[in-house]
Amino acid sequence: MNKTFKRISLLFFCSFCMLGKLSAQHTFSINNKPKFDAYQDSLQVLSEEMFAAKDNLGRFEKNAQFVKQLVTALKINSSFNYGFDSLKRVSILKSPDNSFRIITWFLSTDEGTYRYYGAIQMGTVDGSLKLHPLTDGTATLTDANVITSNKNWFGARYYEMVPVIVNGKQPYWIFLGWKGNDQKTTKKIIDVLSFEKGEPVFGRNIFQTVKNGPLKNRVVFEYNKLNSMTLTVDKKVNMIVFDHLSPYDPKMTGNFEFYGTDLTFDGYKLTWGKLTLVEDVELKNDPSPNDDFYGKPVKASTIITKGN
Image (cartoon, rainbow, N blue to C red; front, side, top):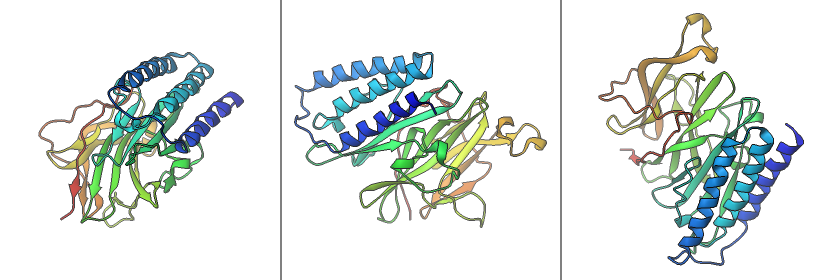
């Protein structure tokens, strides 16, 4: 990692850390809407310039400018209530109970890899700002199944949220995310967010991926970069459904560069707070393949699933 990259990444982290400690001095009202609109316009231009930049230096410099502008906008009291809907490169998902929203985006690098950025903005009664910056720890996480904090986040651009409340217990939120990997493969993930003593925790021991096998904390799919993969919530079957991935040749088992979809679907069904793998799911209509954020993942509706 070069010095410029480190410096800009540090600027991003420090900016959000500083932002998390600041309170508001303005109120969100009809009079403030033009101000938010102006910030949004500026952020939209910067986000497009980030993606259009031809090298790492240009991308990360524009990203640093984007972060500064976002910080400035979020300083305004009750910014939580402004949607920033024009930022198509940035995913903003708000929990149905308005307790928080999560902001995520990514940058590609000259090396064919990706860096992920984001923050969790909490909803506050008085409209003041409480923010948890998300620091991408992908490069240092050797175990994709580990529980992480916001300080070593298993970065992704989230595009769908599933709020879960089971028998009145502490809620948690399942996220579906796109996670570009390298020049050969792409990843998608199913991750879980909960809060412990007010602090975000990523990963939860709820995934039954093998019958009678140990539970996992998150699920990671990896496949050939030239392929696409559906991963979405299908309310008709009340599951998280996804393309079954398999190698083109059995000899390539475990080499994900040679994995793609085989036109069948599997799913995860929530039962008593656990997500259990269901194979060969029959779907009445194939889910829309608004997949990779080459095929930009789009925001989708959320559901709340309750245990019986």
